[in-house]
Image (cartoon, rainbow, N blue to C red; front, top):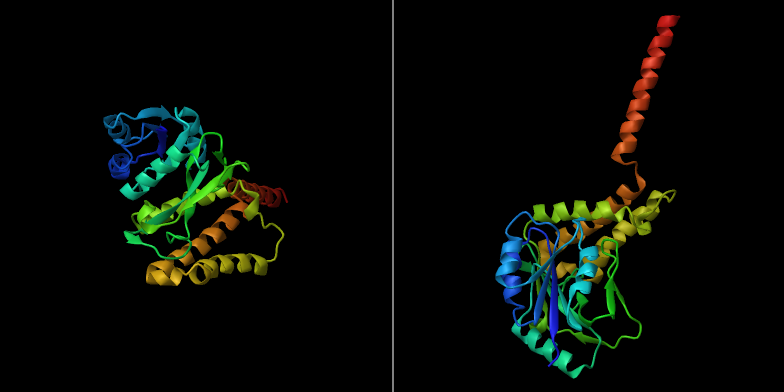
Length: 277
């Protein structure tokens, strides 16, 4: 039988980690890439006999994920977030795929829970959020930028599991405060991406892209099916795009302080000139 490594990145993950690890105890190896947690994350991981490696905390997971791939001992890799669960039905299907060796990369549907509610639309429904999480070594890598997604080897045989009962269960955000904190963090890193560079572009074009984000999620991706939460999240993701654009194109705090000091100096110089007269 083919052996499977499960790699999980962690940072202060004690709230969900025990349940996550319990759902993947069937894997032949559990690899934890911890970004210097200050809670009980390491202690919990040790209880499950996980191999633990440390990685610099950067505020987002992709570099740690890539590092984790190099630490896996076996050809098949299951990559998870620490707030995700693998149901029994999915476990059976993944083991079958590994043994039959019919795919190199498997895209798996994901059931997303925001604030304790499972979402049906907005790009978060289980049939909308389908991601590559099970793959053979060498057929997938992660991008280095936040939300830069994945790079699949063009020669890979790609399969899909899109089934509610065989979906990864993902508890995205447990509160609005948690969501806003992550939004603020992620948009900081988006400033390194060229996709939000709108310098010199008219405001109407920026407004178009912000509105497109909202209507794309709420109407086209059927966020309306989630009622008030769907409306809020669609608005929030439009605000995410607006904030990322603003952070990428407006002066940062250091530049504003520099301008403040220059104005202050000019005021002092003007005052001294008047005294001399």
